[in-house]
Each structure stands twice: as structure tokens, then as C-alpha cells.
Image 1 (cartoon, protein in one colour):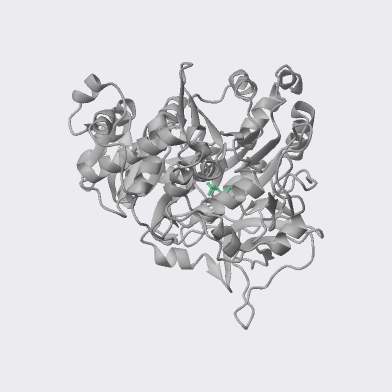
Image 2 (cartoon, rainbow, N blue to C red; image 1 turned 90 degrees about the vertical axis):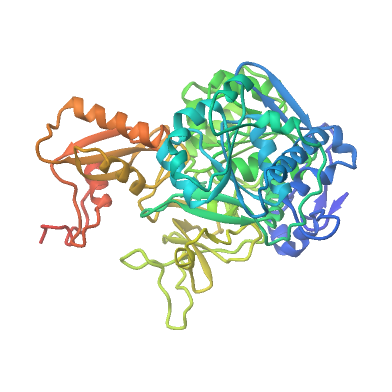
Length: 598
Ligand code: AMP
């Protein structure tokens, strides 16, 4: 079969190696069109687009029906496999459960769970029903959970008895819109919990076939929360047409081929866990490995070996943890099936790219995207030389540029309303993308003005600082705001500060990301106390525990330092940059706006 758009013959090379889906970047870029990529979707039989149809049902009449869609490795060594046909039935069942419960199209179904089979069934079943799927990190504490359920007007929540009892039960009174909580777990235990329903019992009570909702390409499908510097988390809204980009990037960037064994290690609470942990591989007829357990070097190598993983999509923090124990360990395993390694979510150090060559015989391919873009935008491709430390080049179909910023960090507009772009290589500025790709977010839920502020002069402003070299490779410089990236998780300092301020001893709080060799950054909080409180070790520990209890391990500060005051500018804004400069022993920069300063 010849793929016109990507310019080469698809298939296996003699000797068993698989030719890359995209043989030549420049050629593919010249030929690519989103219109042609749209044609790759099956589309609903009666017209329209539904992500779950592209991921599951489109395969059911053909030879892939009996192929494993998901191989779910349980924490305790149990393995559950769902073929495409079985996934079709299970997701139909869940769509029927939602119908029986009276959930309507467009209403939000949240899942708060680790990587359990029901998460995948609920996600795709929700889409089949025409409702909106929204995942939550299972490591969130009650506070971030409540905020997101409230902002998203959650109608249904799927979770487990343990997570429910620890984190959600206490919130129920404050969430009157949350009509149904479905628990996955032991029937007896669930029967003893008031106000909840048994997920599995409901699944058994309905049919395993349903009529998929006739969703249109622009109907809302997914809601992903992300953090900003100020205010509440933002709910990025994505539509069914996003599947066009998931499928295209799965092919072009991750080089997925039918029947590949693909392992995406992302947490399901994060956008990667949906776009590439669920949708992209399934649209391409791939077998996805899902590991319920947390990171463990030996377990991970064993999975790569025993499952014969061909394509692996992971994160810099995990790779740095593996690197720490040495390349020799990797070489003890038979990783001969592995063809391609990609990484996302945080800067990937050049040493890790090189270490990949040593440990796996291939470099790690960094790529860049964010919740708002819904899919990969900039990447190192299998058929292109990797420049260690670079995020790579824009996806065919994506126009990326570097915008000049003024002293306040705002993109500079020319008199005619166009953006002032940085033309010279090496000069840094804000990464901007020309809007119009299918997985682009369609809004922040209920926050039109915040959404509008993301655009200027016909470009989408990503908020990231980059530079572009003479050959068009992009290099990450840093975030343009104060948002923290810890082990790949985006954390809004405001959320953490607000939680600390709820403690009776805390007068002020300022939160920064402190560089960390493994996690990239860890959350560090500076707090000033109210009069009458002693700045001792006991209180410091109490504050750490307090924050962890409210925010959960994914968000809570790792370090707290008690200070006499938190620096603010004259308008009262916390000067996090100054806190960071002091922490790192760097020049303090312009502090003329410091409150009490000159
Ligand atoms: P999220 O929306 O949680 O996926 O986080 C997106 C942010 O993560 C981006 O705006 C970047 O700041 C950061 N990020 C993602 N991928 C990369 C990468 N390859 N290199 C550096 N930073 C990245």
C-alpha cells in the first residue's frame, strides 16, 4: 500500500524491520493537508464523527475485531485482555448504563481512578453515549477534586470505594449536581456505602449493544482541566473531530502501525492519558499495554520485554529514574521488539536522549504539546535526525513561530494587528501556533475572555518560551508564566497558595517550582505566619501534612520554608520570580515594583 501523503510504501521491510510511516519530513510537510487526514476517519455510518466509533467500532467488522485492543496488567500480576470486539461490547454497555440513568448528551462524566479497565470502558462508553468524558488524577486531594467536579458540572462520577471514601464522600453535600456516583469494586463493600451505585452491577443489568450517538465533528467530547498562574483551574474543551489529529499524530509521530504493541505510561488523569493512552492507538488498530502499577524500574523493563512492546511513549522523569540505575540494567533484558521511544511533558535533557542510544540502541524522541493543543504539535520523528535537547520540528499541517514579547511578557503586536515574530535563529520568544488543527481546544469552560486572551494577531499563544534554530528545530527555554511542572504534572501555584492560606497559622504563601534533577521541578512553598505562631519544625511539618491532606500528593508542596514575609509588588501580587531567584541564588532582577522597595 502506498501512502501518498507521506511519500513511501507502507509495510514491513525484509528482515522484519518496519519502515517508518513518514519517510521524509519535508516531503510529508509539503503534501500534508488536514482535509486529507479527515478522510482517514471512518465517520459514523449515518454521517458525523464519534471518537469511540473511530477507536473501537470501526474495527469490528474486519480482521482486527479479535485483536487485543487493551492488555491491562493489574497491580497484583493479574492480566485482563480486551479484544476490539469485547471493548465494543463493554463500551456499548456503559453507554446503555448512562441511558438508563437518564444522563443526557453533552453532560459530563468524570472518572477518578488509576489505570483500571473500567476507566477505559467508561471513557469510550461516555463518548458513545454522546456525553463528555473528563478524567481526574487519582492522586488529587479533595480540594482539587471538588473544584473540578464543580467547574465541570459533573453529572456522573466513576471511582473506587477507597478513593470515594477518602476524597469524595466529604464533598457530596456541596455537589448537588452530581447525580450518580458509580463505584468499581467489591459488591458487598459498595452496598454498605450510602449514595452510590455499583458500576459492575449496572453493567450486568444492561445490553451489550447500543446505538452510538450521532455526534457531529464539532460536538464536545472531552474536558481536560489544566492549571494557570492565577485563579481556578481551566477546563479545556475538545470536540469529536480531535480524533483526526490523534490518529494522524499516532501515525506520523509515534509511528504506530496496525497490531503494534504500544505502551503509553501517562497517568490517565492527564491529557496524554486520553489522547495517546486511549484514543490514538485504538484508532490505528494497535494493542495498548496498560499497567496499573506505579513506576518500578524492574517491572517496567520486564513489561517492555515480556509484552514485546514495539513503541513506547513515556516521560522524562521516568527516563531519568531509569538512567540513574544505569544502562547495563536495561541491557539485561531482551528489548529487541522495541522500535521507537518517544517522550513528552517536560524538557528532555540531551543526556537522556544519548542514554537511550546506550541503553536501548535508539535515541529518545522528544515531542511537545499541551492540554490546549489536544495532540502532539512539535516532534522528533523516526525518520529525522534527533538533535538532543530539541523538541524537534512542527508536525506536518502545523505552522509554528516564535513571537517577540514585551517587558510584561505579552506578545508584541504591530500597528496592523499582526504579531511581531522573531526571525533570527537563536533569539527566544513565545511559541505560537496558527490555529485550525482538529484537536485544538474550542474554549475554556465558561471562560470566554480567558480563552480569547490566548490568541493574538491570528496566532494561538502557547505561553512557553522557545527558540528556533536555522534549520527549523525548536528548543524549549522555559515557561512564560509561574506554572510548575513536577514529574510531568502541571501545577498552578495559586491553588497551592490558597490551600496553605486555609491553615489558621498562615498569613501569606508564595509557591514556586524548585529545580530537581529527577522530577524537573518540585513544589516549594514559602509561608509567613500570623502573629502568635512559632516558626518551628513542628509547625512546618504540620503545614506539609495539612497541604498534602487537602491537595493530594500530586499537587502538595514537597518543601515548606517559613519566612518573615512573602515579597509582593505594589499591587499586592506575589513576586514568585523573586522568590525563585532568591532560592536559586540568582540575581534578583528588576525589583523596583517590590512593595516597600524603592
Ligand atoms: P500539559 O498541558 O499539562 O500537558 O502541560 C503542557 C506544558 O508542559 C507545556 O506548555 C510545556 O510547558 C510543558 N511541556 C510539554 N512537553 C514538553 C517538552 N517536550 N519539553 C519541554 N516542556 C514540555
